[in-house]
Length: 114
Length: 112
Image (cartoon, rainbow over all chains, first blue to last red; front, side, top):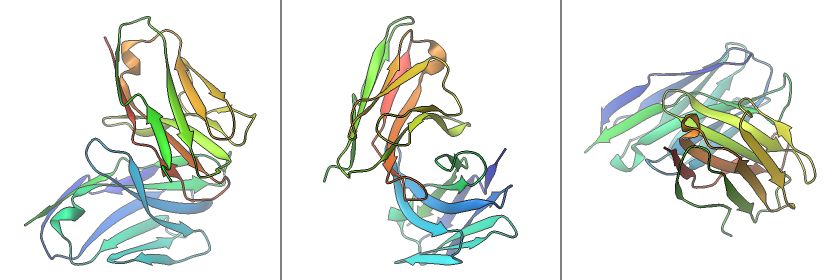
């Protein structure tokens, strides 16, 4: 059974700092990996999707990388801002079993202090 | 485009009552999903519909039923609500296969 782990569970940084969020998965047979942002009391917003054949994806200050062989993905946030404060979740779509199923990590709660 | 919409936003039920959560998407997506989110448990898949006319169980289907009414709408029904079903319920949709998945704003359900 695929398991997705996110470390750390919570992170607090001062504004302007560059930071890295980590995501690991136990089965490397994945179709893709998706990073989401969730604000308190809200739904999930997709940030980046990396297909299994890709190494990284970039959107503005965000960069996500994927290393299937080591079962790891990282989300890099440059020049963090208070508005980046949220919970960040990663989820993979695994090729074992149904490819419609996303397996989620439990998230990293990020606080960016002014 | 409204994206994925869910109704109601909040609901309080008594044990044993029934209700239906509604979900609709306007992105012409083929696949739709229902998840529940609980503290410390993360997001877990309840049911999904890979395409119009099909539904399948996810990780935690017990106590729920679903209906894919048409391509746009996917409803989740609790026949006899239990306190263990207190949760935040999210509907999601995508084109199918390995596409980006889009989420609705959620329904916060409390069962007393």
